[in-house]
Length: 149
Image (cartoon, rainbow, N blue to C red; front, top):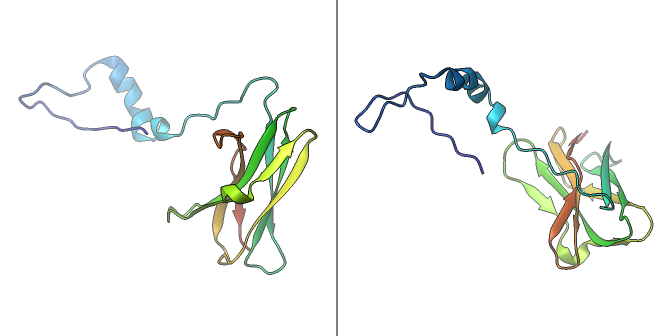
């Protein structure tokens, strides 16, 4: 988690103004949010599994979404989970329960994920996550935006 405190003060504790050139040069990036962006996900090591999410949008009942995931387990055994969350900042998040995670090992596989009971026009970000046998998250696909039709 990142934390920033911005203030312009010359109070009794010190002079906190940005008087040096380096700070003044960095300030535009701070106020435009460059430093608030999440760090890039690690790309993994050679031989790690590869997870790719491909959004396919709505399914026939118009209150559901479907997204496809290509998983190359790279010779390992992984447990795949579908994850989705609201882009509206409502805090809504859903992930496949541990008991229902799909075991992927050996050859590349496709995992189809669905969510139903959604509202028309709702925007979701979706991805698939891979866990090891101990339940530790090891890899995840890049999120993909899906809109319920």
